[in-house]
Image 1 (cartoon, rainbow, N blue to C red):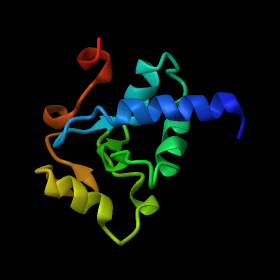
Image 2: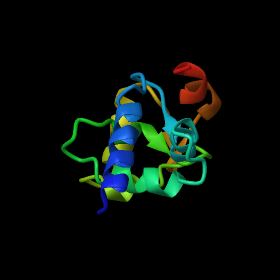
Image 3: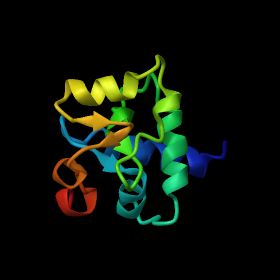
Length: 110
C-alpha cells in the first residue's frame, strides 16, 4: 500500500473513533468529511483493515443503513450484536430508525 493510502486510512480511523456510542455513520459520510466524496469504497477498505486498531468499525454502514461490512467481522452476527449492545435495532441486516441514529461528521465535527 502506498503512503497516501495509509495516510487516508489513518484519517478514516480518526473520524471513526469519534462516532459516539449508540450512533452510526456511513462510508460515504466519512469520505465526504475527508474531502474525498468519491472514496466511500476506500473508507470501506479502511474499515476492513481496522481490526486490532481500536476503531469502532461496526458503527460504519452503507448509505442506506445496511450492514454491508458484516462479513468482515469474526463470528456470524458480531457486527449486529455490537450495534444492538449499544441500543441500535437491526432487522435483516438493516438499521432501524437510521435517520435517528445517523451521525454526520460534516455537521458534528465542523
